[in-house]
Length: 88
Image (cartoon, rainbow, N blue to C red; front, side):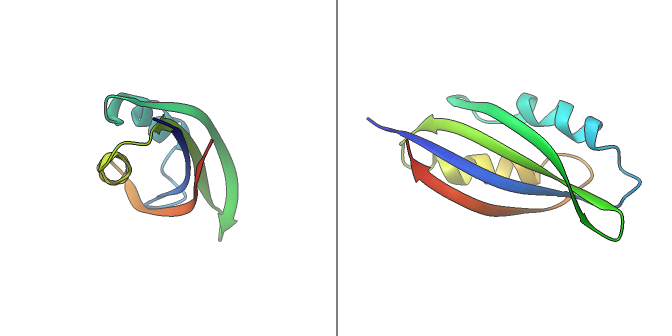
């Protein structure tokens, strides 16, 4: 079975939400079998910063959907956008 790299932009609810708080929650909430390999804070718009999350996982059915659900379930997250999903 191959590995998949998935990159997502995690968007906080407002500029006042500390990105460090969200970044601390993400690794705790990802499904079993998913490894968060990198998180980078990037400027977005109007003072809002996004968190670019890179996750590595097995190419298993349904795992991408579980990852997206877990990212959306992090408190004070407004949205999650897929940037890229590729085999590694």
